[in-house]
Length: 407
Image 1 (cartoon, rainbow, N blue to C red):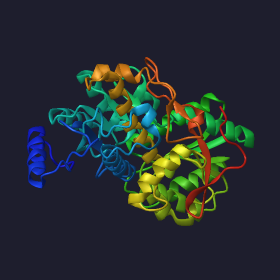
Image 2 (image 1 turned 180 degrees about the vertical axis):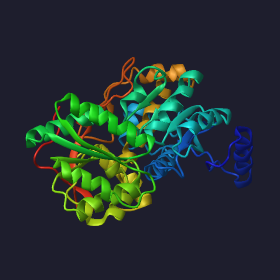
Image 3 (image 1 turned 60 degrees about the vertical axis):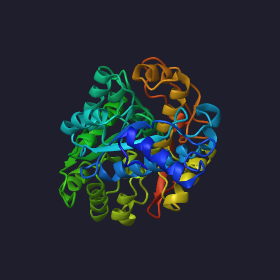
Image 4 (image 1 turned 90 degrees about the vertical axis):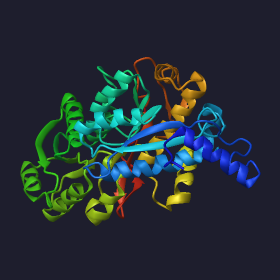
């Protein structure tokens, strides 16, 4: 259903189908009607963000279909129980930016030319930084549900873009609180050479250095490298308390964990939440990833998470649900809620409607977690959107029993 691009052709096709079957099955009572609400999606099919981008793409395709069927889980009271958005079907169109910031602007404009009413960025944070310029120029609502860089929602060019996931500074505070509890002082960070990895690394470093922690090693692994032996040996020589994984690319991240295991690095492993978002890393790293701790948006005990997880795993199978899927759900539901209030798809009207949304029930974080937006506040989460999980048997399956964010 998402391959039809021309709205006139779509309407004609639906009309013809309804006539042929003689009943209103194409638009049964309560089903979405009329011209589609077109959501343009920037994805990465071939760059360094491919693994987590394609996880997000699977989610937006499935959840758009679910919403078109009127499956809104616990969100009926907030977003409305009608199918689709404003009673109209959701149509998705896609462009691949290859996680290349130079392409993101071009591809974003192309989506608008193809009829997109709203843009979703499901590529890397570095690429989205450039794409948001188009949001401001064209005054179109943009959602970057999976990106964690606070720069995306900071001036300039932040007027029309919103993010769902906890920003790195909020996650950084949880890391800092945990490390203080453990008495740690010396942090080593290893990243890859992708723009997204650099953006996220810099944000975390700024947060922990401002809190008085020392960065004793800052190593980078080139995309395409097959091992991190030299970087890990230099890290080991600094005897850090923590080795912090700031990777955006799956294969390189897995290679780093294997090198840490190979060289017997004793420092505790911590990772930003790309690790929990990318099951491919768990597969490639094997048991080298076990013991790693992550401040993550997904943990047990949130019934909203369980409801969305059930929708996702009904199609994709058990143990396939990660935090990326939850924040994509929230992004779609935020759009549905704003459109219900604004009664319009015009970008400024939608933007203004989002800036009035508070107590928005989220599919991630601790039980009862809500998102709260306001004028100029374009990431609505808090530390209640976080839990600390530990890897065991190559999965983020254990809640850490030392400390959990409580604010």
